[in-house]
Image (cartoon, rainbow, N blue to C red; front, side):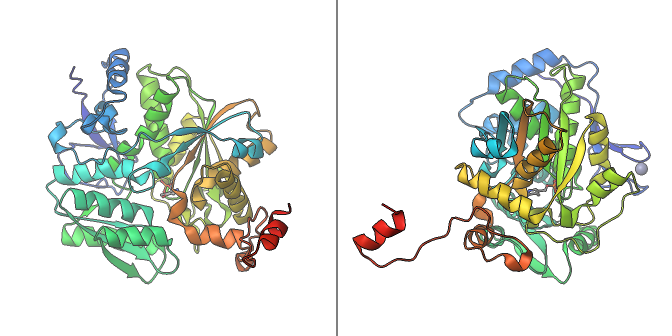
Length: 430
Ligand SMILES: *Cc1c(COP(=O)(O)O)cnc(C)c1O
Ligand SMILES: [Zn+2]
């Protein structure tokens, strides 16, 4: 069955429409663009049945957890799609992390199980496909790490060159390693992520390189599939809450956009609430939402959760739109709260990188504040793999993060002993 849904780009600020064939990242007025669809005449029930028929496909483009939903992602012929069969990630019972958060029904969607270890692959499969659609041969992004790892991989599998702009200072080793390994041309610039973001936009314009930051509307389209897949895993039963970390704010914008489309199509008939969690040291959305003020960038963002160390997020308007639609909330969590929640996610046997664990730290805070009911059905998104940032794990468990004001509250310290049975017995207290 072919749905052929009419699709165009539309400015968030002035509603001006552009053809999808026209390569552009922003409106002439400077506003950000959105992919829009005419869903009025679409048979939602038939679309859902088509997606169900693809569930569990063994190989090929449609076995991807993004392209299974291609009618609402980017509806191109299969041979034009760049994919690593991303998605199809697990939805775990939160176990220990659920008890810690005070929730009885807490599931964790582990997007760290994607091909390069973060949800960025869902956006990147779509972004790289768009790059090919526009006949690009070079792609670029500014990145705190995971976007560059993902882009370098998707560029490599599809025969494109990739150029990566990373901020100076700490970038998690697992991520940098991937970017180099996948042969991304890696430029470390003097300045923070926000400076890198400004620079890459200018470079792409000047040198005719295709920009793959989340300002790119097609990356948002791919990331919508996180929500689609969670709902399909839940047999389309809508949870009460989704909890998701917020950095550049593309992911939560994508989640709410996708849910909105499902709601419009009647595929779901309840609107879940969305909670976006920021680190206290990089919290511009939180401040704006909490104090009902104008958007104001955070000058020198800082957090151990490097994936969300962003002071001037490009997608804040899209994010606010989703929060309004879903009656959502924004919360902030401290460095200690992030790392203690991470210790619980890790000790539960699941494991994730620091930024991901904002979902659990935020859940606990919102339950404690009485905003989320302990009986509510809650899905937290774990955005990245535990091995992305081994330094953070070792630092916490060796209790050496004191200079960042973080204590190893639940540290599991390695023990050095003599090679004797007696020493082992003493260490195991038997
Ligand atoms: C990119 C990223 C985030 C932040 O997502 P945004 O879309 O920028 O808000 C959170 N966690 C991880 C692991 C990431 O890679
Ligand atoms: Zn405009």
